[in-house]
Length: 88
Image (cartoon, rainbow, N blue to C red):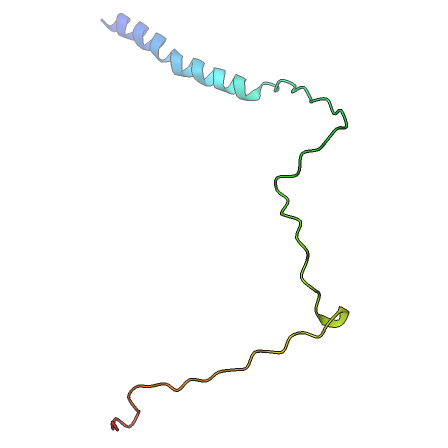
């Protein structure tokens, strides 16, 4: 029984070792060269990462018009209890 168990474990435990060696070989091998497509100088496809061609907004500052004035501030009256605790 001990000899068959030893042989069984000896054979079965070699499977993960062989798989690990194959994985290391597969990861370390040189990649196959990829054939470059021939460039016929024809039409080009547009760049998918480039945004639409829209006009820029007008420049501000010393190179163009004066900057826009700040909007007027609006103050609101807070409603609620007064600090003295008396109601109207």
